[in-house]
Length: 129
Image 1 (cartoon, helix red, strand yellow):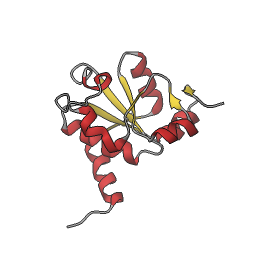
Image 2: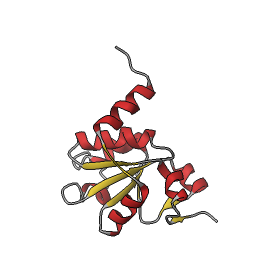
Image 3: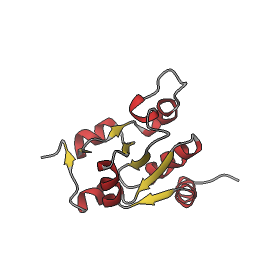
């Protein structure tokens, strides 16, 4: 049976851990990873989380696979020793990305509420005035 995007996101959220922005910020200070899966234009427009790793959702699988030939070392080198906190604008792409990372052997969690919740909590963002 075909699923809508909304159903896919809900299923991903049900199968993946979540963290609020403050928990993710504290974990990043303890050497865990914030992974931003938004597009480059979104980072330029809305800013980005200080110290985050940026990999757009559309290329995540190739960048998260250490054997792909195009892997992102900032992510793959942390697969066995860090939790990956996934962020997007609102949480939908983060849910799908976190589920994918878990399937690939990562310990991943969705940052609830995305970048807007991060900003609402007064957490640091760079690239915005």
